[in-house]
Length: 89
Image 1 (cartoon, rainbow, N blue to C red):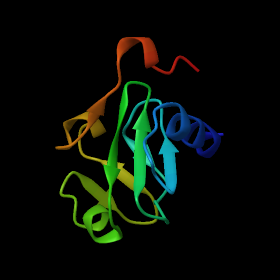
Image 2: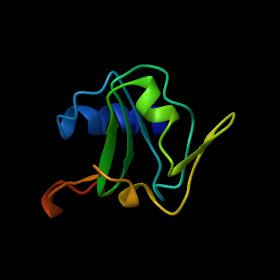
Image 3: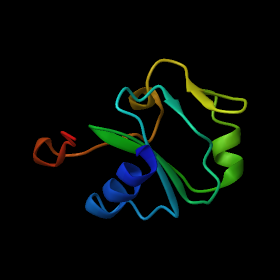
Image 4: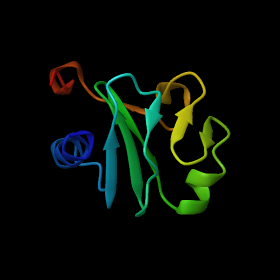
């Protein structure tokens, strides 16, 4: 489900990612596998241009899955979408 929502938001918000994942709380994701890749929440997204940029992001704890320290909105480069574009799933 989250992969489908990520793909939907990638298209709706014109993110331009090859792989986009969604989590309603913006705190936990599977790993991105294609780049540019995006992590999305209902209010916006963070786009990683390369695998190296993703893997070295200090706000992420990457093991089998990805845990976000805090919230993705705290990562520099996070894009807030306009209120009219917020995902209400």
